[in-house]
Image (cartoon, rainbow, N blue to C red; front, top):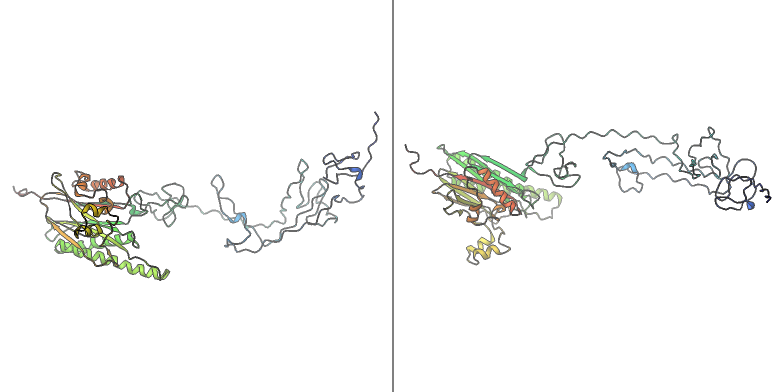
Length: 492
């Protein structure tokens, strides 16, 4: 069968989709365009067969304050970050003070030169070299689609290279008892072992609070030892202690133990307990070598501790006045219990609900509680309004009625002197321990049998008992071994 000759339409590309055409095509093989209805191509310079609207250049980005986060224009390089490998992303500076050049119109034919931003119908500028697209011109992909135009390196604004990252000094090792790094660099988080610890004591990566020096403290000197722990539920340790030993004028030893518990509902309770313990300990160390009676020295020590805590209220008032003069702030406050073992005499002193217990080495002898709480429950029992079981079952039982602080009703130091007839151990502690062994018999059961010989180990065991019981509060305990020399033991 004979074939009719294909009429020549004179088009190089389809007017509908710009598909390249052969001279004998009657329809576009890509979109089916009827080529017989298309106008004949005009001779002369190449022009687009489909009209394209004049491109509109993007307006220049508005000026922005480099330190502002409220500017509408946000650039990728403005936000630092890391890639999947943990390396810092490049933060190339972006200039916003140079107008962005207008995009070029899409040409009708593959490889046709075009001028960026030239209006439709204007004669394009000849290419710099055959086969090289003009700057900003789209580049044809192998499949016939056009990719986005590459940026013109001649018109790009070159920014100064980003400064080299400052090397971070190696983190100082963190010990369980001290979370503060040594001078010279930040510390690593003890929880995630990756993030750095901020100045507020929290990890920048996981937010975990880091151990502080006061979270767990231990100290042992001749004749006394103490341990203090934050517990399992409090975010900081608001207890404090002071243990020391000195000599009386006759050369005999005197052992001192002070334990303080910050009142959590007051301002800066941790500072209050630390100030009270330090002041009371220093007062006793000054008074006992002068020959002051231990009971009188204890009374003076409690007064000195109260003055130290009261002085914190003045600082708190000044600080509050600067930030908010109308804000109500409770004065710093704490409880105190202390013990002095000297010249065969055992003296205790207290304000609040921290306690002292006597536990004899001979466990067949009865133990005893040496202090009476300044608390609501104790008042109810003393007034005969409730028995002890009823009073301590009440939710108000542990509300204290005496404390050290500028807003206390009236300072009423309690002191008592004992002369034990046998050797034993004095347990000086906060309610973080005695809540788990309230009665004297309960306390005697958990004190190790060798506590008089190993007081530090005994204090560690008692703190562990409170932690095993739940550790709902800060826990502080000091153990003071008290030795009674049998009569005639020194004779030949």
